[in-house]
Length: 268
Image 1: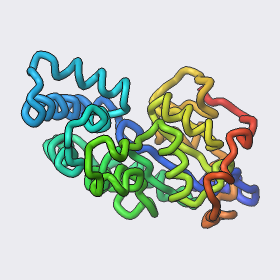
Image 2 (image 1 turned 30 degrees about the horizontal axis):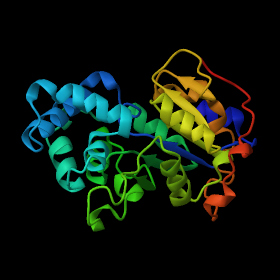
Image 3 (image 1 turned 180 degrees about the vertical axis):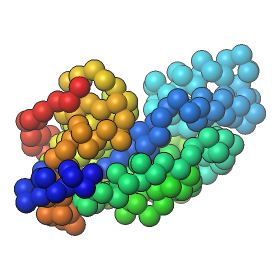
Image 4 (image 1 turned 45 degrees about the horizontal axis):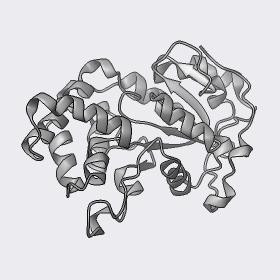
């Protein structure tokens, strides 16, 4: 990283801020957290909602495809599910010990001088726990999470009063841009989900699809893992201190889809 910084110093980076997804982006999907989460959601559907065990997995998949998450789907269907209770059940039982400290990832994140933000559909407690387990506590200035996107959910008088907002909805992307106070054209968004990446690009963000090796039309860059960023997206470190603390105060009307800049490179 030092050689990268020294060899490119003096130029200007095209990015003022980097926004990272959390799960399956900052750590590998292969460690088993995702599978454990699916099992916990199935158990929630059976134990808390009364669905037959034989139908839980299929229902979880259907709810995810149609509504973006099981919680969003259940509330849309009229189930009075408290978001905190749901997250406590499905995340509180996760085997977090599977997530190990990653010094290499920490060094890479700390070498990035621009603003760094987490943007996850998960609740804040889960995000904080995962970052702590990875050894990344204090490495990000902001966590944009479920609570950020759904501030009025607890005030609802009926389950469908406030639809749950999550990536990849345009509403979620715009909320994140407003909360982060960034110029999307100078912001790099990294996520492992193609639909999330496509949504990011639609609101003007520069995008990175993580966990893939094949070129994607939805992404400006494709990288196998975040730790390969220095080789694949070296311009992050090109004069990264220039404008690293810039914020943009604006309204949603300031964010125009047709302001997407033409990409200069796609890394496969």
